[in-house]
Length: 230
Length: 315
Image (cartoon, rainbow over all chains, first blue to last red; front, side, top):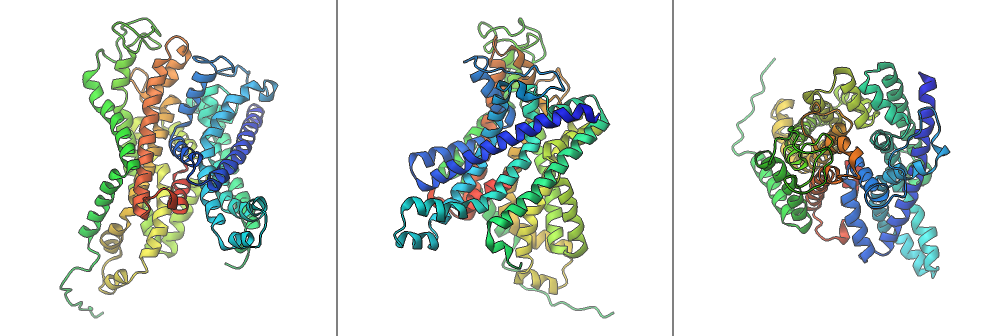
């Protein structure tokens, strides 16, 4: 059983790591830009789009991408992967594009909204005002004084996003026939293969707990205030 | 033991249930009057209308074979045929109401269980608090969809079980939100006052605490409704909804996607309906949250509104 689940686990781990990393960076950058240019057209568009996207089920996003990029409109990318179970996803990198894109689209809005809020708060704070009054260059004020303080509260949401990915891969892997543990779980539930279900659920729960601990530790390291007594 | 004689209280305490309830419903009306709320409400209302009126106006039976598989739109079949040659339009019109009822039932179940757990944990404190919140932590250690799949794998895909499973996975998040809201309330003077009069804890929770929790509760109902629809449609998409011949928007996407290049409408229409519905409910919930917090202007909402909708709505 472990021999069958192990390659799936590696594939899913690659998918979660890649989409989590891209989604986090994209969310932080877009959120910061939205905050810097508050009330600009970019801010309004990104806020409306992210409100809409947070509500979309993953499979609707996935089907939308399939329709646009691999069947009806364009034919650039494979709609489903035809990898046999037990092989690794990076042997055909194009297979990773659409599943990763789906997960990135789904997680970016959360980071974006949190980052925007935190960045606006940081930009309006006294210490950033002080830095400005001292005559520091605007770029230095933004990147050295405001940005790190805005990222600290965003870390919790980034952690939540990785938690979300643990559940999100189940549907996304099923849509793209991606050989990961999510697809393994759906197959096992259809077949009532209880031992496999147990193994995969325990793996996902362990990942959940692990991410929770890592998030708390990083949040602690990132904001000095929380290190002091409770 | 001597009975403590409590003097009759002439007038009801200032925090009477009725007044609070009216404030709650007026917040709904105020939310519907904002631009965001009106857009959300009309989007969701449109889809609900399709789902409710649909079964009565469908041109064909949703299970009758009337055309060729994946027939292109045209003639008698406005949206073409599906994977078995059934009329897509009829299946779309007939396939929504079960999803809506199941999502509403799961939301109601989850919010009731979660509120009871959260309010009791915060008010009773001590061992009850520890027990309830540790149970919540354990359930929260599984992704919602995975937990629902786990329950389905034990009993099999029965509609009532899916409702209970999805509702049950909502309860922990609701419990956490209401617990922190109740912790604030339970130290207030009016709660202390009725406690001193000897009101039973269950009555205090029901008639003094609950009416004051309407605001966070309404936002929770909205968020959980959106997620119920997402989870229900997702489970149906994976094949854990109603058994196959019955039409269901989630499962239609699954069964028709192999014919995407011949008749994409069999996939696009149900996917678009689900998308419009969840975007509508989420937008309206966002409007309620904004009204509750008292920020109507776009610019000032930054911290509070986005914290509520960010932290609260993740599954």
